[in-house]
Image (cartoon, chains in turn yellow, blue):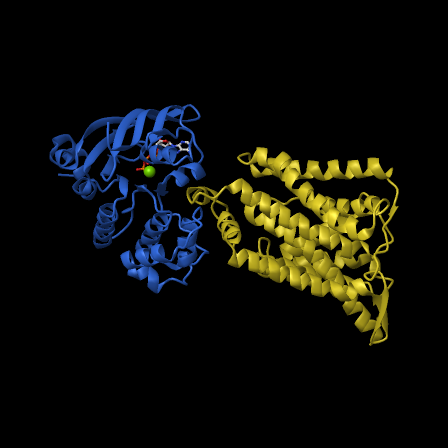
Amino acid sequence: MQLAVSTLLSGIAAGGQYALIAIGYTLVYGILRLINFAHGDVFMVAGLVVVYMSASMPLYIALPLMIVFIVALGFVIERVAYKPLRSAPRMSVMISAIGVSFLIQNFATYYTGGLARYYPEIPFLYDSVTIAGATTRWVTIVTPFIVVALVLLLLLLINKTKIGLAMRAAAKDFETCQLMGIKINSVISFTFIIGSGLAAIGSILYFTNYPSIMPVSGTLPGLRAFVAAVFGGIGSIPGAVVGAFIIGICENIVKVNPTYSIFSDAVTFIILIIVLGVKPTGLFGEKITDKV
Amino acid sequence: MSGVILSIKDLKVKYGGIEAVKGISFDVREGEIVTLIGANGAGKSSTLRTIAGLVKPAGGSISFNGEDITGANPTEIVKRGVTLVPEGRRIFADLTVLENLRIGAYLRHDSLKEDIEWVYSLFPRLEERSWQAGGTLSGGEQQMLAVARALMSRPKLIMMDEPSLGLAPIVVRGIFDIIREINKRGTTILLIEQNANMALQAADSAYVLETGRITLSGSGEELLKNEAVQAAYLGT
Ligand SMILES: Nc1ncnc2c1ncn2[C@@H]1O[C@H](COP(=O)(O)OP(=O)(O)OP(=O)(O)O)[C@@H](O)[C@H]1O
Ligand SMILES: [Mg+2]
């Protein structure tokens, strides 16, 4: 019972953290049909920035400042690496994304000297709590609530506001959006801002579980979140969230048996392949159409 | 010249090496219905898309209300009061009918209530389908929605690219009635049509475009009577 509770709790928490990254993948894919390979690395930078900032200022300043910085980073990456390629073949943009991913990792290696850096213990989130006999950290308990709240806010934004309307329209037809007077580049920038902002918040929750952070620390969670987005049906926000929770929970169930725990990612991917075999567009995916 | 709202001078449009529009000039006067007719590939859509700012001209100038708008971006052009109902309707299939109307008014910040009521009175069918996804409408209804959406920005000049394409004759007549109605309310109309007969009947002035050049012009009536036009575009 205790084991079941703790497994489920950590599964849900991990899933929630992946969800905050996965939304960034799915939003950007939805509007640009681009897999933003740099997204996981932006997530890692969010962690590193906290490491460095917390050395010289209190966390209650460092954390909000980090979110602002990461949002700006997401914006700049889009403007510098993707916008100039707007009319280039999609493959070129993908390669640009891979390039940005490497660039960020290289920068991180340069700054950290490639060493693991100690991630600060964030008060409250880091503190222990016991639920039904299972001991865990508060972050595990609060993550699902934060994620659900943020997702509801996001859905509200997308479905009820003008910019949300523009985002939904731009996901289908840039040119007609322009005819409505919509500035496509602003809508795309806005999408990157939301995606990086959510990843920044996710990084606080995620890295609190780990003692330290390395330049490659974004790769695995980034990859899992990407898989979650595909699993849920890339382009769909509810899909990305549900996919992320499923992947988080699966991963933690496999990890229960120490012998097999190293296979947790492989098992997750096998499940993914089976699901995509049955439902090629993912759980919530529509038929993926090429944009006009 | 007074009353000229849109003035095109020696407009050229190129795609790579191909010149689709080879230096055309024409004026649209305020309150008129002007039509551009021509065969497939004549450069009609290219002309409208260039005026709308989707394509940058390779030469020549476009001025609207006396101001030069050559090469301006689409947002600027919509702001000035020029809107395009694109070829093939291009409504947003996933958005509801009402959302399609709202997005047509994207640059406006005032209340849309009156305008929505007005377009619903023009197209009662759209009101019945207000909450339906645009993609579930019939072809004719989608064309109505495309026109209604364009009206939502309160344009001074509305350009329509083959609004009758693929529609049953009765629906086409309905669309043309609406075009006249919109025009009566003071909106200037630049209309592209393959359905030359209907277009020329509605038009105050008309131009024939052939492979990127204007070869004939006159009032709608004159062109209806023109033998060359009759042979080429009216099938009589
Ligand atoms: N994006 C483009 N790239 C290259 N060539 C183009 C492009 N758009 C149009 N053309 C070419 O320009 C010429 C004029 O095309 P345009 O669409 O303006 O014709 P049209 O008069 O609207 O024809 P239709 O009645 O068939 O719609 C055609 O030869 C077309 O192939
Ligand atoms: Mg055309």
